[in-house]
Image (cartoon, rainbow, N blue to C red; front, side):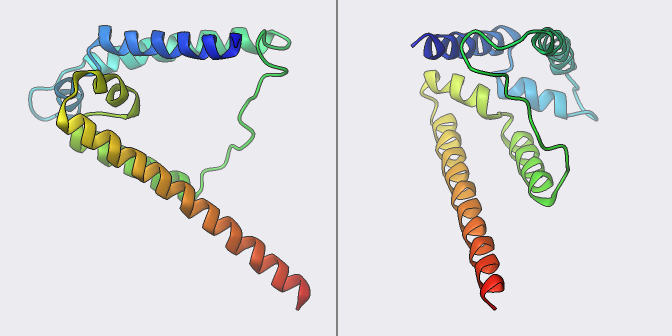
Length: 152
């Protein structure tokens, strides 16, 4: 239960930060991406602040032993850049550029009951489910291929 409360508190803090910074407003994001028009640099400052705070947080976390609400710290183990990562980043960027929303602000914006936001979140969820199914299918194909190669 404490871990669930901590997760909720982190999500609430993140959502509040998005609201305060104005990053739930698609026009702000689209203004940032409009570098040849009426460019709005606000998002650059928000991102710089986030990178600074995150860097400090990671530095402090690396010095600690075990976390309070888990058995161990879970750091990423992969450092390679592969085709699925690049494809996912491209799709994320295209969606962000077309709509002006990424997953966090979109979920915060659900509270507005805006039809475009609801449609975006549904499409995002369907895309995430599709990606999971694709990965499961690819994993099963790889396993089947490995088994048939070992039998052959």
